[in-house]
Image 1 (tube, rainbow, N blue to C red):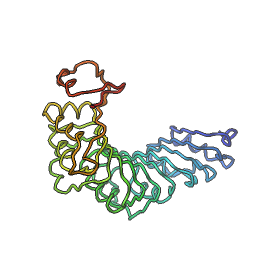
Image 2: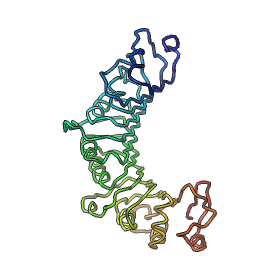
Image 3: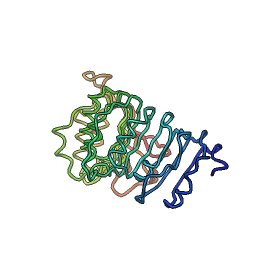
Image 4: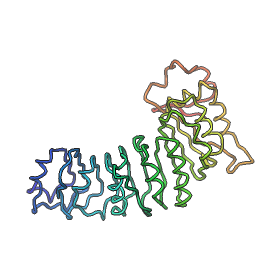
Length: 305
């Protein structure tokens, strides 16, 4: 590594701490490093694995020790994926990575010291993804502390995140246009009284939806929470759920012009995607009835027309 460090463009480290000790070498140069991945789970004293000559554009970090071992320049960092970090480490990331446009956060535990996140304005972040494992009391600190004026795309796993996201959007005056749901929460109805509409969201993706008979999903899609919705994409399970309760025709009505709503209230695209073969009938869907509603086959599913 010492001999080739000045030529390295991508570096992935998943090694024991004792090996990392041997990497602390002053002759390392990382002028061309653009991608860095580190996976460290074992607690140990922070190590200076890299030096400030490294200025990666993309990093993937697992474990707080990975983050605290970095001695790099944050000037070019654009894409960040982090897992198993404490909230104080995430705070430092948002404070230092001023050029970051994409951030995915998972396995964010509650800090045993109950540390909180200070208010932070990040002027470049456009895409934010929160894994379902961020829910354990940490999401309010994260979403409640950030102001993101450039935020355009969000992926969340819980309706409770949606409530906090609504506040973030209003606080940031951001151009949020695309929202992706991967919902796992069993009891969702309790949150709707606090939920505010999200105008401006034109693209909604519902990848997965479990522990609910579809009533909550219908409320989200039909009760005005997304007044500017134009493109709707459902995963197979959410579609199957809505089909079984007879809600698909209600959604198809949104493809018909409505003079009393902006842009005619028209849903321009309604797509269903999934891993199975859509040219075969699955158990819970009457395929002939579905075809009568008008569908066009795609490689990854079908689209209503």
